[in-house]
Amino acid sequence: VHRLDKETSGVILVAKNVQAFIHLQAQFKARTIEKKYIALAHGRILPKEGEIHVPTGRLPWNRKQFGVLSGGREALTLYKVLKEYILHSDQKEILSLVELSPKTGRTHQIRVHLQYIKHPIFADFLYAGRKTARNDRKILSRVFLHAAFIRFVHPTSGETLSFEAPLPGELQKVLQLCSILE
Image 1 (tube, rainbow, N blue to C red):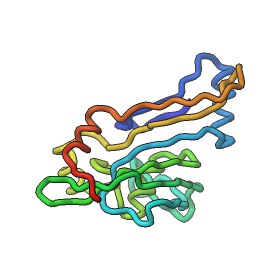
Image 2 (cartoon, rainbow, N blue to C red):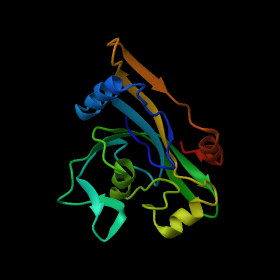
Image 3 (cartoon, helix red, strand yellow):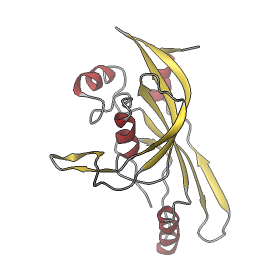
């Protein structure tokens, strides 16, 4: 019913039949489905809670990438910093573990929005910059983005259902290489 980027892990909603698909798709269109993602972003994000509300679209000069464009489609992401870490590598870098709730469902929305506020996702080869991504990928071979939670109304019973997916092992290992910033 929806998609995740290739390197994103977590919960995905799949319909068992056409009627369920239509019903669930209508919930996405009406923006009644609640989704939460977890990302590890570069730097200290301030304020620790807020929203990123800028339009996004496909970049005309690079069809594989999206970005903030004045003529783009509306995109809204709410965020909340959960913890701050120091990565113990060559440089002692601050990283923010962030919970993100996209209110619109644009392609690469979370990745583009975090890049826009100058806090790209760890190991994001498209949006973190070539040098940063290359260094990050020595530690993690994929983007640190995880679809952690989804809530929706069941297409036939009308019951509100929610599902969570714990952070996968390779993402937990990255956090274990860090120390919590107090």
